[in-house]
Length: 414
Image (cartoon, rainbow, N blue to C red; front, side):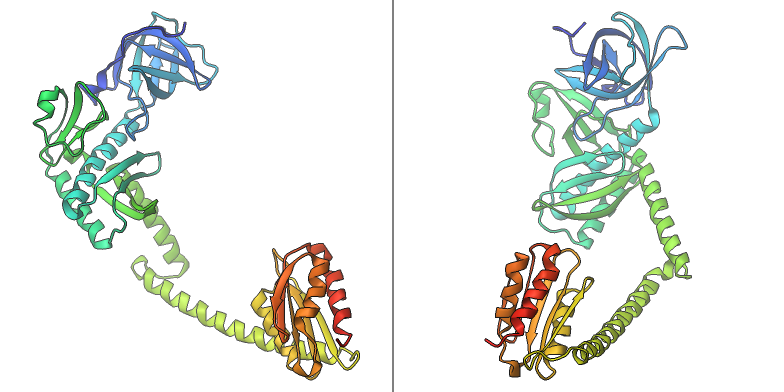
């Protein structure tokens, strides 16, 4: 039976966010996103909304052994729909059920949402950075600040302000107020709904229109840690954690730091200095490797040149180095073109074919003309000057034919 014109679900969490079990009656059955969905006359399940994810939990039937898992909770026109696992047979309309909230998930969301209100107030108080959006997921909590930049000093000042507010352990009050009462409350921003508005007040720290679940006192948030921030569409996205998630984040980061420290045979406090030493050693090795590679390329270029018989007074050296980048190709081509009557045609590139042509001035050859012969076969593009030209692209399978065409062009005096 699809829901017709029905009264809104009585939301028990409005009055008591700590309620984990309740009794209710099934008033309608529907289907949402491929799942059987139940509407109850009353419910303590929080439906997804306002940046806060839905509760999870279970529904128990009159028969003690009958239980349904609630995998999602959504709200539609004031009606709270409890989605069951796909393929489940739901209880009948009119059936009495007992609902059970997944308390660990609910309390986590209470900590994160209340902490978000406090951190938002902190950023306004310390650096006049208002929050424009909030998102809470299984792994992270973020707010977007309407500022273009955020410094380390500003972030830590807001974090300190927020934790001081948490530890004041002020009362958190959630209630519906009339338009007249609302006008007397210093809301952080105007509500987006009309009529009676639910306001969450955290002592004198923050007053916001909010339908979410919150603890009774700010101290239950535990702690607030700013984990990082980045630029997002002209704003600053701040990632943070509250309560139990602070401990989880600390454990995760501590495990990573200790594993890295163990790999470097140092204590975790010495890790930054050890990483700096490792980077310096790596950079020195890279410089040494680059110099060795250059010396080896010079020797190879001279060897290839010596092994290449002259044609019409020119030594036309061709080589293919699949792993070489364009800078290395240019260096090798230069080594060859610095030798008497040397003309280099070298190709490489891992993802895109690159070709470099270089000519000794005494050859009177034009590197651009030689390259053009190869690009015509390859289907690529390029340019340069008479001394050196480079190009690329086209069909990699035609590279051998393109090199042959360039060698042919190079062997003839223009």
